[in-house]
Length: 273
Image (tube, rainbow, N blue to C red; front, side, top):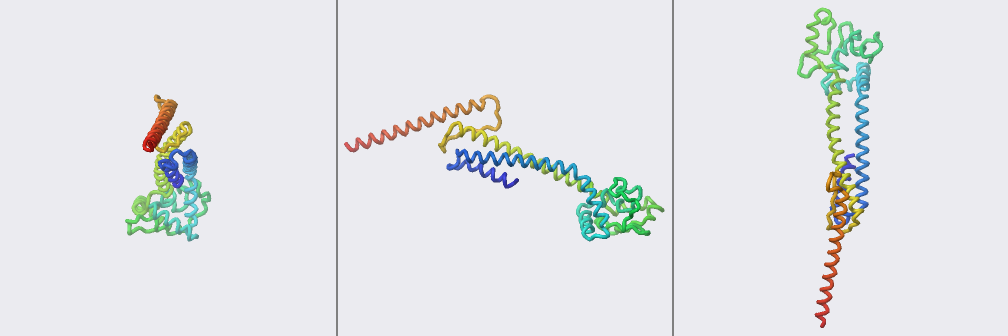
């Protein structure tokens, strides 16, 4: 799409050259390119919005699958560590997703994991070993081991320590937040590009209409183009006035050429005599 817009600007700039200034084929080419660019940009915007609304379940399932394979698949472990370390998040909704799959686990509540009997392989009778990538980088004492006794004997101490050690934000919310920022920036840029495209296309269309109506080949002529058909003077009036003015200027130009040629012939004949 960037190449299409660059080429359209190049084609628009070509009209400043003497060999193509009033060439209808260049104007037709410019209009066609701008229309194709506009259609593709709008299509991309629609597809982006649709995929954004469908991305929720895709992100949740993708993160959950990598959590399930964290202890058995090296690729899942590497991807999960990269995700949690780069985006400073933990689990799908928070670090508690890595704890035993009890009724209070968010993955069971949202039905991302349906089998309650299944337990994490990283959970033992001594506790659950969370990935070290869940640890906040500034917490040098962060321990990936969360003892279950902390939650049974002294719940407040256990949660307080976990809140200090681990990222509280889930990876789903963090990814969604950054994706929203990216889409807002993309939408603003795309809107600006569409405005420029519409501006170019309107100027090109009106220029083509003027060239076709006036049928000029004079590279020194200046023909108007308009962006919107505002009230008086109307485009029809502009075309009529400039067409008449162009014909008058061409007539006077031809008459001056004839007079000049006559003077040259007269001087030539006088010199012969």
